Length: 474
Image (tube, rainbow, N blue to C red; front, top):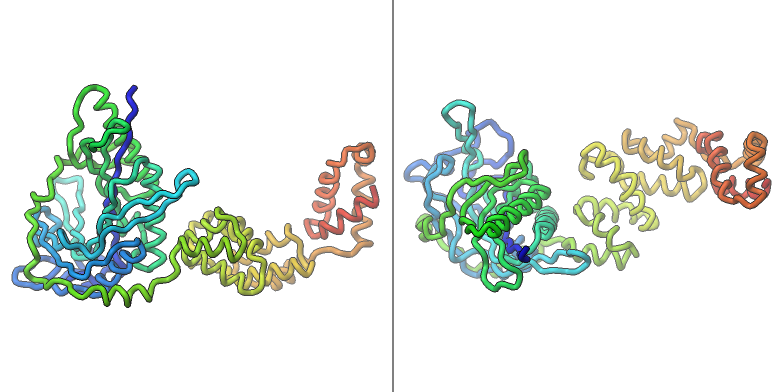
């Protein structure tokens, strides 16, 4: 079989976190009653004029800076003409030959190596409405989404595998959420991905015929849809047939892409400059203002976590995956706790509980100060690690402080040597054969004895003290 390689480019639509639409004052709230967030402008009535939302421009520029793009000093909007029931004007206000941002990149780590994925352009446009299809011979149209501000982020065809595509999407989402530009909610459609996929013989200079997979709404589906499409195109070429340029849809239920329509070329949209909006000029000064408002970005934060807190790269990667999660970590460390210990509790117990409840760190009832207090109780010998895990979950569930839970549940660690001595003697007398085996050289039985003592004391015995006393007894 011939060796093929894939060439993949992504077009990502990100809904920006503005309070109002891009060309009118209608709100952008998700989940409102159909057609309750509309006005003559976004419903395409004759004679109305658009007014550009300045916040949308600022957020797009902020994204461009975060993605290492060049910010244009002159940009303008264009009309993209096509008919579709959810496009009320029968044209979309977008940008064509003069986008806001160009020539950027995102760096991903694939198989331990860094790879730059080029960003060709970032431009602004308005979203269309939403068709709601029924079982009958008709459809409804909800125009609430019409006019919602979108950024279209277009990559260079630098991606070669489905895994790289998924990694790129995850990294992009993290950055957009860090800079408060997009909430990244793929299920609600505020981050959507179209994938352009072609295959060619390995080493071939020219690209193959590409297909476009529309509106993929999860990282898992991005990877699976591209995997399927690569295999489908290779099978066509192996048969001696030609791949048809077309737009396809991903069917997650069946795990296949389905033909939607033959692909239009850009000139079919009859782009021309939008006559109702003036060009954007002097954007470099706005870009400098926005640059000063950028937070520390994920890559820089990850490098700092490794150097400042002596964490591993894998630990840092998980901690910085969400800005709020990273902030939670740093807040806990401010109380003078060992960063490594704080990271262990967050990456172990805290992440486990958050995943079980499908809960975001911002909704977590457990605060950094409470973790710090619990760690102090461990340091003082008041509780041990086993008890701490019980207390940690109780704090998470109830929001109570550690010292209150210790008092209410009587979870103070047992350090009374007379009491522990009696427990140890009882356990050793219960297992005389194991005692003989230990003394004959089976030292691994120490773990068995410690386990029995911890069980007898309901986990409250001081493990270090138990080990010391047990060794003397044996």
